[in-house]
Amino acid sequence: MSSPLPRGPPPSLGEADRRRLEGEKSRLRREVWDALKDRGVARFPFPPHDRIANFEGALEAAQRLAATQEFQSAKVVKANPDAPQLPLRTLALRKGKVLVMSVPRLRDPSCFRLFPEGSHATPTIEAAMSQGQPLRPQDVPHIDLVVAGSVVVGERGERIGKGGGFSDLEWGLLSEVDKVDRGTRVVSTVHDLQLRTSSILPVLPHDVPLDLVATPTQLLRFPQTLPRPRGVMPWELTDATRSEVSWLGKFMAEQERERRLRKP
Image (tube, rainbow, N blue to C red; front, side):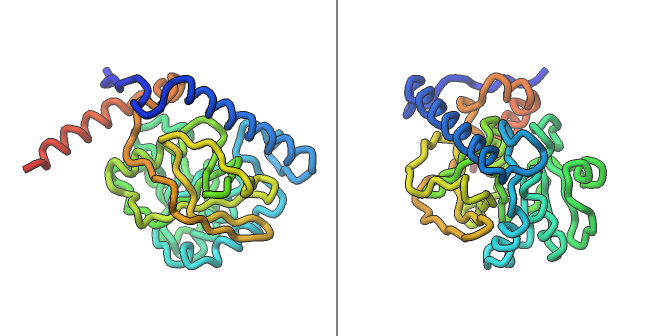
């Protein structure tokens, strides 16, 4: 039987505030998805709603980001499996980097897949599942650069994803086992219509901010003013996530036992 995860909101954020912030995030997602569709810049798969939407100019955005020092100096890149970041994942492999991808919805304790340096695969999610080396979070190499899928990006580097919470949970898992840290850069590629750089977006405790974002026309770097979460926050998980990631309670219990053993 899986070990249970604790529930309940963190002391610093009440349930009413949480519902208000989540409602504002939902409104912003719908606004961006509608804009991508109405302006004709969404690309397959359709519709753009309820996903990390693919967009016209995704290749140009990837090339812009790949020209940065942050990308070029990274040896190990962890990337989301969504369509608009396929060009950036492909560039990572073509430039000789190790590429780590996550299993959709983290259903398996070996929830990451690794393409080694020198791989000539096309890093789709299908290829990751059939060709990638399965890894548990504790077996992943240290990550230099995280590529996160985004729906909305704000002026401080706030990132709003599609609402499932899995990208932030992946960060939590990897930070539990010290595979990401303060030196790990977090980046994304989006269409210009996804930027809300004149607005301060809602942020919840588990949200991981971006260091930089590339669009088809520009590159934006953000001051590191927003805190980065550390570890898994069980109180932030929805019931749906708890059900999908049924192995998480056992993983957290194992990490706690290891921390106790390491104490002098």
